[in-house]
Image (cartoon, rainbow, N blue to C red; front, side):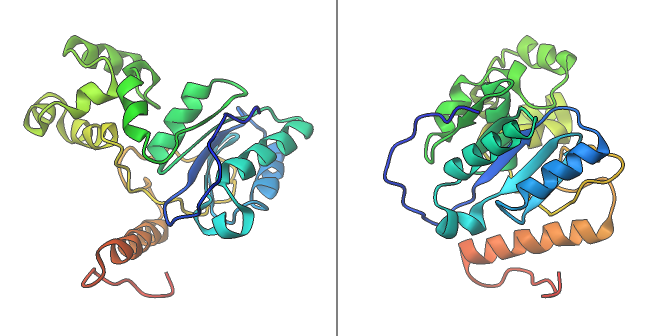
Length: 232
């Protein structure tokens, strides 16, 4: 995995650093091997299925330096173990996965802080993660060729055209994706990544997501955010 250029020096300001790692299809034994390596770089690793993972580097920045450096080291280590990966790094799940799609197989793409809008301005709908071909054709028929085009459409018309799913997409086209990375080790079967906030099952995981969101809102806005039990 070749590291993209980035400016220096790096100042570890408080922000989210989420990576998406795709090592392709992987057997149960291989994905456990990948997970054991990945969690050495950050404890917050969410397995999606196969060799696909989300990683949250936000809590490791001060100890390990720029997350891009950690991600490159991780990619090289996995490559030595026989796993070629594509990876993306940005401030949330949607942008990091979009960056990985942009990077292509075996590549790495980083969206620098403050450049998310530039990335979305150039991102064609055909590279939208998880978007089916018929959905791409639907949006193009409405004149939406790029993610930024969708962000410029009034939410009233987006909802009329595509319902709640369209409203969620509109938020992501603006760079908004509040879904936290929840630690999930590999299991026997992958979990379909939810389009919205919540996973399709597991009540305790839903509560973890809400607790993490409440914590981030308290950090951003200060007081009077709905509290969750500390044990969560």
